[in-house]
Amino acid sequence: MTKEMICISCPLGCSLSVNYTSSDGVIKQSDITVAGNGCNRGVSYAKDEVTSPRRMITTTVPLQEGGTVPVKTSAAVPKDQIFSVLHKVRGITAARPVSIGQIIVGNVCEGVDIVATDNRE
Amino acid sequence: MNKNIDVLVIGGGPAGLAAAISAREHGVDNILILERESGLGGILKQCIHNGFGLHTFKEELTGPEYAARYIARVNSLNIPYRLDTTVLRIDTGKRVTAVNAQDGLFVINPKSIILACGCRERPRGAINIPGSRAVGIYSAGTAQKYVNMMGHMVGKRVVILGSGDIGLIMARRLTFEGAKVLAVVELMPYSSGLNRNIVQCLHDYDIPLYFSHTVTDIRGKERIEGVTVSRVDDKLCPIPNTEITMECDTLLLSVGLVPENELSKSADIRLSRLTGGAIVDENMMTNVSGIFACGNMLHVHDLVDFVSEESALAGVSASDYVLNEAVGSATEQYIDIQTAGGIRYTVPQRLSASVTAVSVTLKFRVDKIYRNARIEVTSGTEQLMLVKKRIMAPGEMEILKLDKAMLAKIERHKNLRVVIKD
Image (cartoon, rainbow over all chains, first blue to last red; front, side):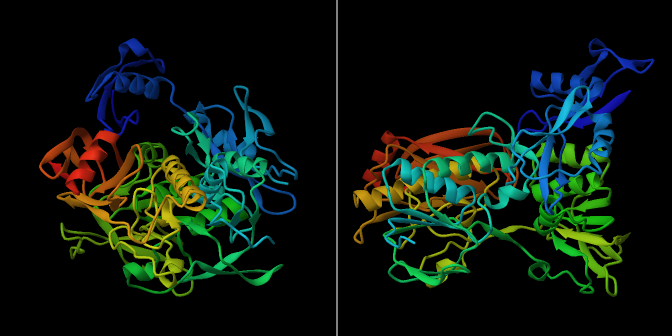
């Protein structure tokens, strides 16, 4: 299989062509070949994106008294878990006071928490 | 309120905060920040996504986290600030009129002013999109404020005009909140946004990006019902018979930021047509002695880290002006920085004829994408610098550092020129 992607490691934004084989849904990093990269960072970026792409998620949680508090995942989570994590955050309300780093929802995915990113007095 | 102010900072966002902290750290006692919102932090409060602070803190923070670091420092330095306070005008002689509910209308005559008012978004009227004036058309930043600060959803089926970072970020944000983002439509053949955002805001969610297209009609009686999107030619004119209709209930406009300079006009500050902000020298001082400008009000930035650096410099300059009277005399001569070719603008636009700084950071933007081009800096017949850049794009502010040796040559030749050589 071939996947086209843009490398985000540096401003060049090389267009990568990534070839890989998948057996039983498993892709081995050693089976991946990358073309179009301007440097080695493109190869490791492509390999990660194909085998285990991860993303930080940022969103907001409503406050009981009105308004919102912004939150993020404490670490990157698998890309295919993004909407599952967002679903776990939906319906949650936080109460003042809130401080940066405070856990709003614990362990939404692989031990990753949802933490506040702003203070609310 | 203590009205005996040495440095008055207008704007409590990332620029104003960095400038005030810097002025205090350089020995100024009487500082006052005036901020029109009900909290410090400026636009960072609503930029809940991450990617801020890579240069400043070597960490990837969200907007509010970045702001919180500066707000904490302002508080630990006991720098006074007034919230919900709007500056109405600045008159000749640095006479500042402001208003808030507690103090009413008041006047301050500070020794110096640092302008850090940020920028505003270009509205629909400025780009003349034809069609009905239905409800459901927002600038991307307004939608961001509704969603992120107030917790209101702006619509269910969204088209976004403009692929700058704000448009890209909102494409993802609205997708997270359950909307269907039909497309991001971009007038130019390239995006001014970061590749990272193209990938993580559009590709990740299969949101199509149409290059060389624009919105040519808006339909809907009370609420917007749909838009027409057309391809444009190389003169950016819509091509007939290329129309695509998209049914949507929301249109976001991410079509440019404009430095906020309403206050500059009555203060006789000279503005640059190229940046929309003030013309400044290497100290971030405008043509009015003792008035400095920094941040998005001076020129629109891509990275808040550069705003903080630039604004810290304005703070140092204001403190030098107040404490040493070392900066800015009425008889000061200037060297205008000349540009040619693809350099759209530089900040600063001019250097003092006798530069006392040890180094000067020159920022500039190019007018289109350049690959493997060189930037040449000359003074008179002497070449000061020849830098090769693998890629330069309009959406990425570039930086050149002029060192002491270069500044000495510039002072001798009374000339500085920056050009792109393909």
